[in-house]
Length: 142
Ligand SMILES: [Zn+2]
Image (cartoon, rainbow, N blue to C red):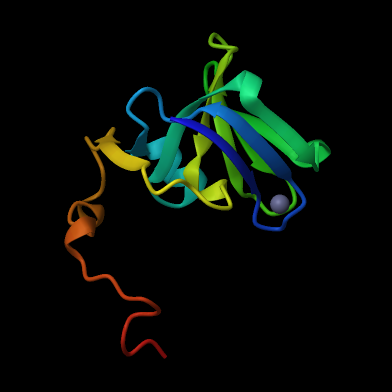
């Protein structure tokens, strides 16, 4: 799906635009449950494949740090607030995987197409989708 989106980190220091194909031909978003994503983002994270050429940091580029979480796999985040922004592979310089949570708004047509790397996830996560959803905090939270 061709998009023209804006996004940024939690503290607002890093801002970016993205114009181009997002999610590949199917408009696919995947939720990655691998241990690296869980530790880096606190839980499984929604990502979409994107084109490096369409990604432009418009503010706060000096705050972006990249961490090599496995050989050739770089995870970018805001140094001030820790927000994940994208990941990329050094052997695929034209591609990056944007973190869906960093966009300001996302087209309704984008859908989660798959959950990946679910093998080995902790038992406490296995039935996450079955848990009730609330508009705010869970009832009874102090
Ligand atoms: Zn930030």
